[in-house]
Amino acid sequence: MADRTGVSDPGTGPPSGGARRFGYAVDAWYRPLIVPFGFRRRRDAVTLGDDTLVATFGFFTVRTPLANIDGAHITRDYRWWTAFGVRASAADDGLTFGTNHDAGVCIHFTDPVPSPLRRSGHSALTVTVEDLSGLTLALGGDEDDGPSRAGD
Image (cartoon, rainbow, N blue to C red; front, side, top):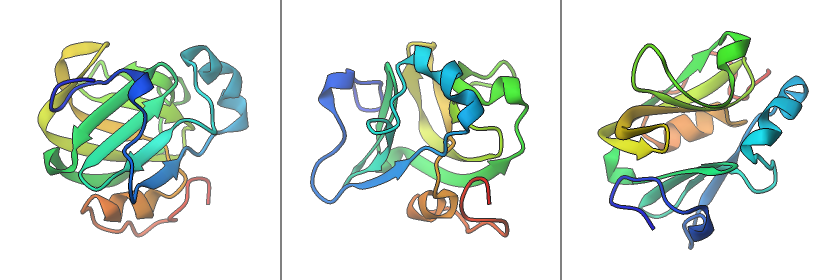
């Protein structure tokens, strides 16, 4: 188990109770590139519990209280080489759990959330989930004018 805003042991699993699960929108071309990260489509997702967000991507897990989320918005049209796997941004302190280059949800944190890639923490996490609008709205963001599902 991790601290208040930290990365937890993958064995701790998603939150229980009335959790809402958002699966990743996986581009078939990226499958061979994300398997080395330990990614498994049936297991990995972004899960919203009663008071916790848990995002899993293979060997990586980010867990933070919902109260630490400062907003969310949809982003689109990534460069392919920045769109797959787990990566820390070279431009800022963001973290990406990516499975396609079409679209994802950028989740902003009040307090940075640490990961093995950046112990000082990330102020945002981008996740390429299937239900873009659903996750964005669930986190208090505004609905996007574009398609609500990745790849639409």
